[in-house]
Amino acid sequence: MPRAERAAQTKAELLAAAARVFARRGYAGASIADIAEEAGYSHGAVYSNFESKQELFFALFDASTDDRVEMITAFFAQASGTFAERVKALADASTRQVRDDPDRFLLNLEFSLVAARDPALRERFIERIAAIPRAIAGIIADEQRAGRIDGSVDPMELALGIHALGVGLGIDHWIVPGAVRPEFFGELVGRIMSTVAVPEVDG
Image 1 (cartoon, rainbow, N blue to C red):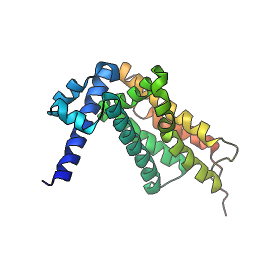
Image 2: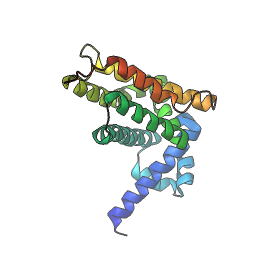
Image 3: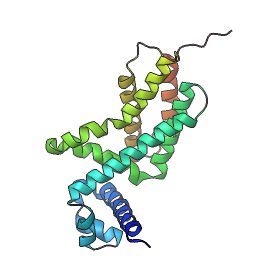
Image 4: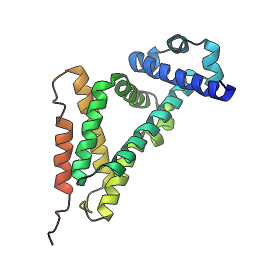
């Protein structure tokens, strides 16, 4: 394997291991030693790719945020149906991801917890942590320009509400399994979007 390819693979494996460790132990409870052991590498391999635990955490945060934004934009580009139907389908997909990949959900929650707890770290998170609702807000704004969503609705407020609802229901799912029906998030956001949709005019 070429050196550059091997280096990229090592970095990817370290990030994957760090994601599992941070999800299970939290940022404060995880150590470089834990991550190195999880990945099957030495401490030196970790430090040759990341200066510190904090830098590794931020790299993971950036990668996770980029993946989520890409998933949202790709989903809406490919999905069919009304806007309310597409948002419902995205919410259903998000619910399945929470159920099928708990580490991913817990990691994303940990990003928010770290930003909330530490003012010194918060500044680095502020711009990036808004990327998810900002992506949704951009799609809502596009629908408004196309005349399909009520123009008086603030796109960012609506996006933040949808995002917060998904996070809250995800937490409830893990604290009290079965308390929330898997279909509930999709049904609820579908109803919300139906209330702000501009009725189609026949003819």
